[in-house]
Image 1 (tube, rainbow, N blue to C red):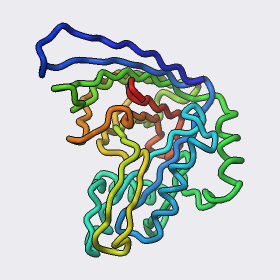
Image 2 (image 1 turned 180 degrees about the vertical axis):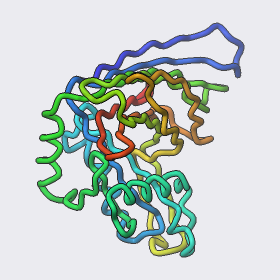
Image 3 (image 1 turned 30 degrees about the vertical axis):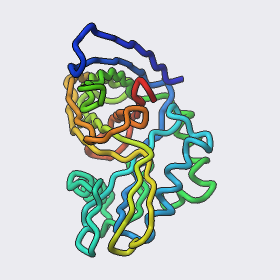
Length: 262
């Protein structure tokens, strides 16, 4: 089981100054599946996929089984609606994964499961494949610690510590760590484009992306600041991390750490 510990630190400071709250998590010994959904508010076929991603937790895919991430791409912005969550880095990652798979094109909605295109995400094949992934011993272990930086009682950034180590994977292979800050329960009223007039809910939306961070002798230790949205809701926010082979796209392990109030 993924372990999460909490430490609340209340500092005797004047009103309006910073306070800190800390929590941490460790990955399980078995492999957690990484689910990446490439999506866009400008794509009229994406909302069903967004709802599917949001349903994973209620359907029993707990964080020790699945780490879901929604990466909004920016190449749909030209048709009349600029997705507020789209990032060029997400588009670049999707294209990189397509090149590794020798795919001729990228598309939305696209689901990657353990770094591989997975078109059966709406079928029973998803649960069956996740079960097989979860049954495998993990080839890497990850530890995350998170300190929430608060100003005037509102969160403005995560200070994230990440420690990772390969286990049973070649230390000379090109392994990398990625970090992402995400937020749940985001809602947009779309006023243009293919989804004009629709209200779109989103979960697991990646808002800040750090990586690749390279291993040295099979180990890695980093500390990074991940800014949050100005109106971020702490209870809906968190951090995710995963280890991936740069040459093969194989995902060795993934870990999700909701905020201390999550």
